Length: 93
Image (cartoon, rainbow, N blue to C red; front, side, top):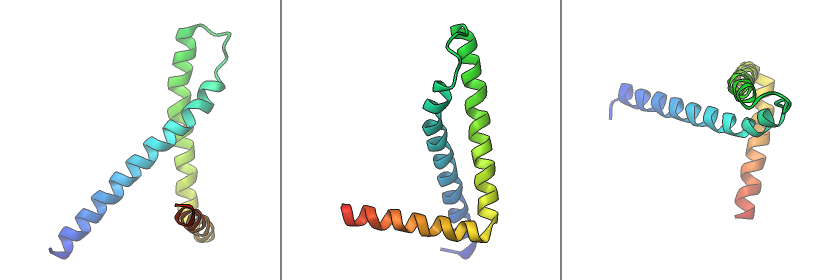
């Protein structure tokens, strides 16, 4: 396999992981967004607010994640937390 083919495969893999994580993030934010909707609004207005707020909040979280990724110290802290979680899962499983 050529080096350029490996790079392309890696880029595709990273893209797929990013899309999956963004989808997972959105799904996890959905209940919080739903809970924050004013129930005195009409059902249509609640639905409109939900569909406006969910992508907005997801985008803001992703933006902050991008900022964290650019911060070397933050990435070291995130790596340490992630490795600790992975180790705990491995020991529990």
